[in-house]
Length: 604
Image 1 (cartoon, one colour):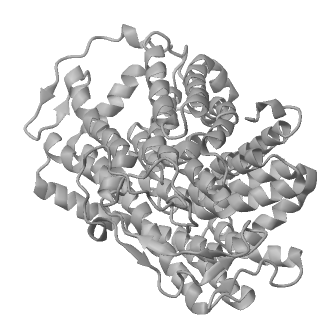
Image 2: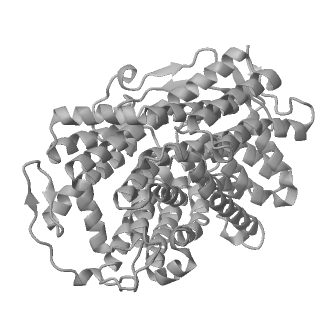
Image 3: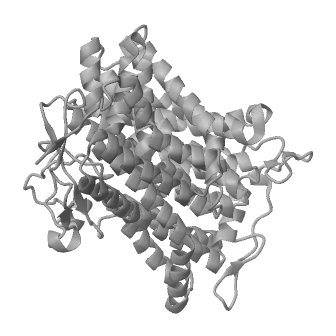
């Protein structure tokens, strides 16, 4: 028997909405205000969500528990898998001494921490978001910033702030693809609309990040570099989104931004060098990179580690190679033809018929057409490399109803995909395994590092599992739609709240893809009822949602894990929450202007 969502279980919308907020209040309140540990706060939030789902909304108890187990499983794989493999690669570079050389090589470009944050957190992080997404950019950027000498808490916050503007085009355009399938809108039109909103924030976010670090004085001192970094990214983001499509927007824009800023720093440097630790500007001007002494030849010791204050080009290439391996691997793993082959299915055509999807971190996918992979890769047994397991007691037992969907009844699927070979974390693991002999580490020592890494991350993995269990319970019980419906009652201000609805969705689920799958249909229904442009409003769900990426519990735990501050998740949340909300409101104001005086910006 199918259980239908009930969006007003208490027959009073205000009270039902307040009750629906309780799991989120419990989680964030205990984490940020009461100072509870992340796993304890997540456990309390999950218990609250289950109590409301079963006791108030009326969801069958076995279905609610199944949703929690489904979410916990997804938290461990693929999300937790990305964290484990990314941190394994990081620990390998630390063991071999490559991280120190990387730190010195970045310092050779600029010793100023503001420049290093732009290079690592924004430009390189955007590339990783475009290629892999799903937590990898935050984990890797935060770890690299820590290795470069940033305080751990600051590195975590900067990685979260930087991981905003690129998110809508992340994982080779997965959020945009998902939104198109859920809403029935043209995918390229959504890409164009997002490309006429996010470039403004691609200019703002680097400046915002620098001002957060060093204040307004620190920002004014480096505005040329900020303009080169954000401006080059924004220009390429606009061009790719409007004339090419969503898939490679962040990949190309991130690379161009990184190259442009690195080249710019070869002949321009800040007049004063700002670094963490001193918390002030150095009175001695920083020498331009081109005036630095030529590096001395690298020396290789018996433990296979490159040493020397002035590293050679060969040493620098050796140190950065593992991250080059990672970049190539995650990009290849994200290509549709490769991904399809690794999942044992034919390569999908460009416009497959849509079907409803669950909160799985993947698109609300389509049944792939039987088109052979042009790559010529062999077709592996799907049951072996990507088994799909219907979740007992949950799959097909829950259904959305209007106004959350345009259909009279939309059955919710719950199919756990264990795509262990095509998962982004497996691509990262492949890069790490290549890096083991490259870095001169024995396989025995690599195995020890792997198990130490797992032990170190065990509590964080538990936290992520609990966070995702909470998200899946709210998703399948329909309480997330109850929260969303409250925002749809804002009338002529709805364009502002459409962005905030996406922000709420990402804060709840930890994924712009999942937020689009959850609220995309609701956004279109509301837009049509209010006489607004559905393309503008539905796209706002994704572009507004990116600002919620820095406060979702999953990302906060990932950043804390990557920087080693496991019990400071509450401090991270308090630091980034005002930035997240302010940027979401600014996006909402832009959407509101595009629904009126700036309507000419909306694609026809």
